[in-house]
Image (cartoon, rainbow, N blue to C red):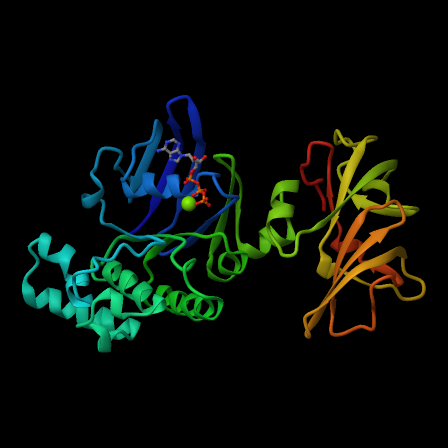
Length: 362
Ligand SMILES: Nc1ncnc2c1ncn2[C@@H]1O[C@H](COP(=O)(O)OP(=O)(O)OP(=O)(O)O)[C@@H](O)[C@H]1O
Ligand SMILES: [Mg+2]
């Protein structure tokens, strides 16, 4: 079992608060990804769970039992670091065996576990090499293999793929996904990479400044970000944000004006604090399209076109100087300097109140 519960966890280094009131329940077998800007506390939180550091306040439970005072080696968890941290003078086999030998596991059992892990990770051919004789991807697999042979309650992985080149990352990402599907062991995975987070996670935890901003499935975070920060953080390229002004209340929401002459209804509880103030409208670059007759038109001037083949990224400026980013499918005939009209689907707009919180109903 690998149920991990964080209960009001805080961590300070001296007077510097790094984590604040973190509450999280991770189910057995779940793959949970921590994301957030550099310095937000992802690694610190992982280290607290691993037992490599102590929380200043709060409880960490594994399968219901408080482990705050249990040393790292006795928590039954295996950590994989970005740096691999392999022993350079030992062969792959010895690297994988080392931790098990220290726990006095019988030789036969150690051999069996190494054989099984090596088969799973397709590193059988390298068992007698040293890490220096391996590629980055092979080293990464050895680091993961060393974690697997310990048969841990949960895997804790801190940016395990960030040293690899783009192509290898894609391969290893798929391998990790199928590994998790086979082992069904709880995994907590820290990454900077949006695609990794979206594709691997059962749930994503978005952290900012030592606090949890939102926890949800990848698609719920994408479709219903609870606040401006999550809306801007999840999804690439970033969501466009436009300041809006509430013009009037409607039976089930608000009428909001934005950009030059745009007006849209927005669903909201009309007694919400936003009732007559400023709001922010968000629209993802992929949710803008070239305007057809009869649709709302946002006139823009194109500043830059990035043709990626399958899609085209258009950087543009609206009439009030607002920057607009659109990702259009295919290869539309658009060039720098062109004046074009973009449009949007009202049901794909996101609306946030003056405090940056998602308006209810949207
Ligand atoms: N031993 C320490 N003493 C003081 N401050 C620390 C210590 N370790 C980490 N911090 C601070 O805690 C904050 C969180 O660090 P952490 O390494 O958890 O961030 P992170 O989210 O993993 O960032 P990154 O994405 O860059 O790896 C940072 O501001 C960091 O400077
Ligand atoms: Mg980190």
